[in-house]
Length: 83
Image 1 (spheres, rainbow, N blue to C red):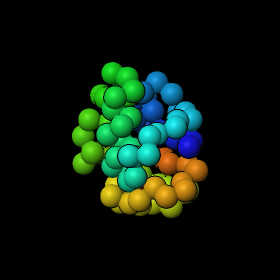
Image 2: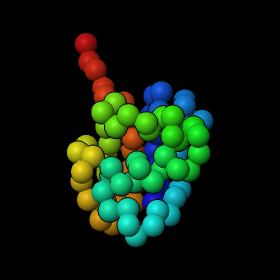
Image 3: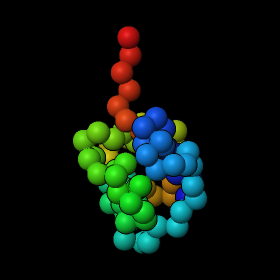
């Protein structure tokens, strides 16, 4: 699965994208974020507060409780504000 990170999430983790193989127990976007927190201190810091995160699965905005299913790409980013 390809992960994409944007804005301060990318800056905190230190990479814009990475390929991961989460365990079978990871079924939702929230599960994925929980699992990623254990990957490094940088992941833990960037993903500490799920209320500050949004996600897209295969380029479609989704809620964090969305099932991953056969997702090929997950993007994690802060809320977007317009103006």
